[in-house]
Each structure stands twice: as structure tokens, then as C-alpha cells.
Amino acid sequence: MKIELFALCDFAADYAGKLSVIGIFDTMWTKQTPAVLPHCSVAVKFRFEKIEEGQKRLRLSVSDADGHPVIPAIDMPITVTFAPDVHSGTIQVVVNIGGLKLEKVGEYSVDLAVDGRHEGGIPLYVRERA
Image 1: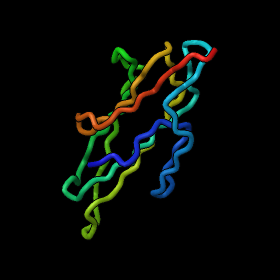
Image 2: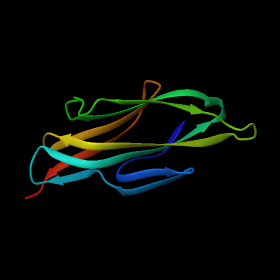
Image 3: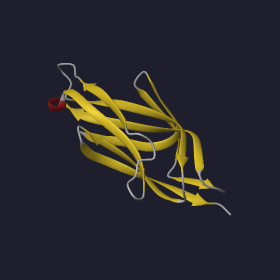
């Protein structure tokens, strides 16, 4: 398994196998805390090999710099299947998050695990704007 895309963005959608991603970011500017993102999305595009067919369990989590969860972890099953003549394929996952509340300025982490194994993380920085 490879992660071909893992992004925090303003909006993402999967339209009939085409992943649309708008406004990728890693920094949120705020004049006050707590800061609230009214809406954001996490977009992930996986590539699996034929040998990896079967059920997988994804877990997406958002935590602060001390490792405390900001929102409850999001768990979801996916099924990896292939036609007989295909050797690899992609699966796209979009998670929409509403009202993400970030209590303080600093660094946060958006982490992705598959079947209990950490596969990637992206930072989210909350910075104070003067």
C-alpha cells in the first residue's frame, strides 16, 4: 500500500472515481483562540497491490502537540477488490469535518492509520495574526 495523496483542505469530493481537492493548507491564521474551522476535509488516495485485497480498517485522528485528541478518532472500513486482470488500484477517501475547534496557538497533527499501523501524518499549525 502506498499513499499517493494525503491532504487537509477546504473541500474534497470523489466524483465517480475522480478526486477533487480544493484549498490544501497546513496553517490556520487566527486573531483569537479558540480558533474554529467551520468546515474542512481530509482527502486520501491509496494505491493497493493485488496481494493486499480484502477488508481494511482506517483511522483518522486529530491531536494537539501533547497528543491529546481534538476530536474523537474517525474509524471506517474499506474493501479493497480488483478485477482479475488488474495488478493495482486506487481507493479514495474523503472525510468532512465540521466545526473543528482548536483551543490554542501551536502545532496539531492529522494522523492516518490502516489496520492499526500509522501510515502518515500531516501538521496543522495554528498561528496568531496581529
